[in-house]
Length: 159
Image (cartoon, rainbow, N blue to C red; front, side, top):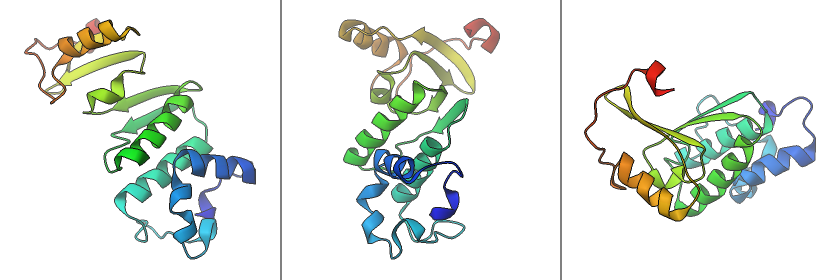
């Protein structure tokens, strides 16, 4: 894993990113620890472990836009909680766009765009109170993933 370290990252920053992404949970099992070569497709790791390594890389290499596509899809509940907490903290330092089907992951984000058939059908600024969060979930759909029938909104009108 050593090859992906940001050139100016300290050991402390490296291990903070590994811990935040919960890579530290399986790091002791790797034959050479942080220096273990992973190969082109991270074949030594499970899908969830490879996903956590990708999150650690993103945390270690700051950017202006962090694009997350189902960042918790292959994670167990405990790993998901740790990783999402780290990503939420990172999102305060940069613009973050997260694509997800999991409505429970939406509560801490500033704005939500609901897409259906490739078009934005709803946009809302998320209100922070429990009552309004529940109401917002009613507007965008059920926790099981069903969305309200709606006419597609052109992106320019949705913003």
